[in-house]
Length: 456
Ligand SMILES: *Cc1c(COP(=O)(O)O)cnc(C)c1O
Image (cartoon, rainbow, N blue to C red; front, side):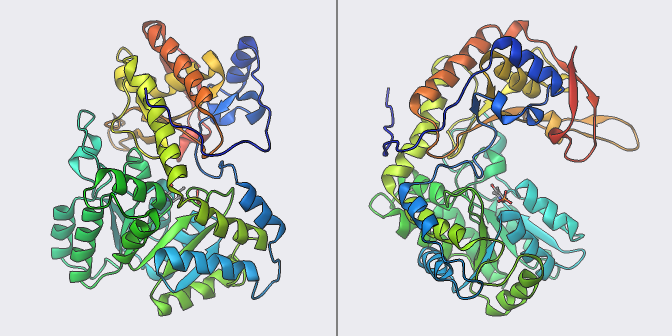
């Protein structure tokens, strides 16, 4: 089997310790069968998220020491701005403390009540920031995105016909269109260059701006190189540059493809918008040459944005995700294919076919994987998305019951991947004996973070 090799050697290590099976059982009970409530030192391998969990390189750590902490005109800001300008081609660069702050600044400045914002699929924080402004967030993903049997290589794409139809009805209350690359809420699947180009053509024909939610732009660029004809011989930087060239601006969480633990930014060509955004930036984040960040953070981001363009890094990164995915599919475990950029998604509905959505099969998987091996994953199914009809009291369940195994960048080795696959395969072999959960505390909004459960 193809095994990707780590394109780095390890200079600093962080010990991890696995508590006993009995201690795990007690920890899970204390946490109300919700792994968000389990303290991190009781977790052995943490696949909760790829956000802010990256390991920085020695080059980035050296940059941390060299960060310029000047309040105004920091040299580190210059490095940050130049690197972002080089990749995106956008003139205006605005630092923020993370992605959602960039979203909040953008939407609170340019949206007015009643506006609508189309996207391939809005990420949770993007949707929440649009809705908080009294606006509507529209998801226009392609049908292949939710078709588990489809092997379409660009399941992250936007449905261009649906977009055209929407814009035809009038654009008065549509101030911009967003495109999330890769499509985090839809399996981390990439968006093709052809799709970005087609979306751009439609959006610009209606004289609207297109913004990329660019958190995983480099992983997306790598998939274009590998899966889309005509890009085989282009560098990641060239491909990324072309992706950004079809849009007018971007928001980004640096906690993903900038390979740092905190940070974000906005970049755009529209100077008028940028000036207005900077007014609010000064109120809520800070002076325009640091946003919500320290100089050392800006330096680490600038360098992370160099690291991430290296093809050997991206080959390993996406290869490691696919390696785990393949270990699982070879054993018959149902997972979403093709494999996305930052996570493997287990199809819990098929895995635990005997447990109905009302008994949370995804959450059962997450709890059992923790009990089995101390591995933390996250449910993306009924706990997160089921909602109750206020009038009839009837519950509506999402189409998919998924568990996301998010892989932090440069943190775990392939032997960790093998260990994870063995734990899941062992769970798979005894899946018939697993029982459902009932919810005993439901906080309502964003309940997955704090809900509590009990075994049935
Ligand atoms: C993580 C993420 C965000 C939000 O960024 P934060 O840094 O967590 O605030 C927005 N969009 C996408 C696609 C993301 O993955």
